[in-house]
Image (cartoon, rainbow over all chains, first blue to last red; front, side, top):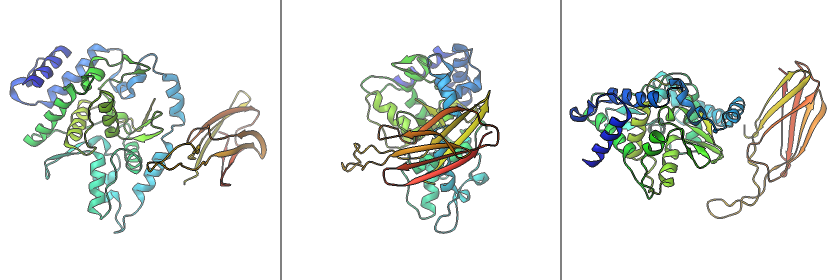
Length: 281
Length: 103
């Protein structure tokens, strides 16, 4: 398969780790090692945990400005409103704590999670919507607004804890993982860019005025307050933006494609600390 | 909740630095909503900072100031424990205020 070959060629180019995943089917553990190894070899000056700060590891990214912003972060209001949403009771008297392990505190690093019941990948946003539907409420849009606020609060309670996305040995989970990986390395759109074109091959280089964040640790700072948006948004909102920027038609926010992509991409950062919510230009 | 002000003040080398994040939509009156209707102007007109009740800064703001503005300034004097106050009035006549102690 052509895409498979591209993936292989890319991975082979990235690191000295032997390409063991070729014949034997998906091997997430080896992929993670190769993926993180690539960045460690290419950009050895950056400590592993610092990858969560994305572009700010590179010169010309306005690191000093960002440090100042972080002292009084623009996402403060979102966290506050997320806390209120989290603690507000549903009409049936329950709260979001009833839907999550550990009462929903400090668990953002476990998402996206494979759900063996439905055989699908569940992101934190999707899990929140499931919780809402189970308690007789309407779904929220997954990209911004109240959803982003609530995700921001649940993420801030997980800050510093390691990302721990599990890909169980279930053919459906492995298929989802593989689909996400294929999405990540497939070229698309008028510009014919893959996610990896910018965030692996050109990580740390400039795209016009912006420094491209390395794919490693890129999900750790979501949800993000982007100055461009003037508000906080989730990972899916960024996926949609990236797809539009390369001239391709974005998928639906709760599509399997985006869930699988989030699954693969977050798993690649396993072990890195959660740093969200973050702020970016 | 809707009109929160986060405020923080620090004293160093005889001068106090005040930082505040002011929650306000700051609608300019030139933006349209999804249905194409203009969102009416709604912005802070006057913002005032006080130190122990004495005004240290007055800002005459308008529609050009961004949503949820951040403001930082410093003044001479002030000591740890002094009261810093902030209040604003917008073009709808709504007001909000907050106080903090210098750290």
